[in-house]
Image (cartoon, rainbow, N blue to C red; front, side, top):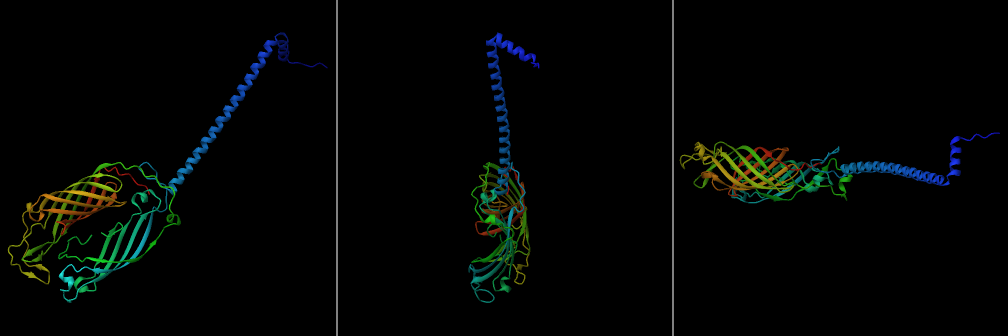
Length: 397
């Protein structure tokens, strides 16, 4: 039986017999090629492991991203807000307030129709409010602030003389504003007392009652100067002294004005600045022809018409310093200023208390009140405001 040997094997055997050194070199080359091949396999395996590791890292990053957005939401202009069923906790509350009336004038002290002092009152409140959920960026910035509106019924036990007023108000953790001197007389009643009430949280969850171990990231606040322009108007009543008595005007007078305030935004909660304030007050410097004015006690006004001076006596321009406390939806502001242009009633210091309610990022509703010399009520400031160069970060819920 003949065994058939391939020619290439015969050539290799002959080369090994004739050239032993060459055969050794061929073996070394073969060994090196084998090692190179094994190294290539190791590299390919390593590359595959790296690809798998990258995929694991990517999946882990997605899980962490989703966890942070669902449990600890971020804030800032470049973040994407996830879907959350309820951004806020909604609350409904009722309160009962027994109150003591300060006897600040003879009427309350007993010089009235009944000849009895008025010392107490009672008020019932129905309030709706909402707040950010705990462990969120906005809650961390504003410290659990809540805001809403309420309806109150108050009685002084003497409906004939004082009535039983109904009050609608908005609040940011505390009640705000009176009738704004839109009626006269307007002496007011000051009270203090206690309150007891109940609050029901509609959609609060168990997780909202626990404190998170991880704090949401709050981006650094970009300090900047913004510019607020407010246009306002209202109406007011006026009284004129005749001797020692103040006589109420027979009608109301219009008020209109503007504020332009460059404001330095220090941080998320504080703004400071100055304001240029212009006003037309239709009741400024009104007068009667003489001191002998017939007075109708039934209607509470004079029969003689009040005289209105020229418009130059009803215009004023002033400068005031402003400070504002910024909350999620409301901004509470105070101002102290003086009229640099103005005559008669429009001279002297004035004070401003204002509430700004955000409508859009660049506009807001303005509800303000103006006082004179820290004691004399002037007028309401009901208007619309616009904010320019607003770089305030967008706070995600």
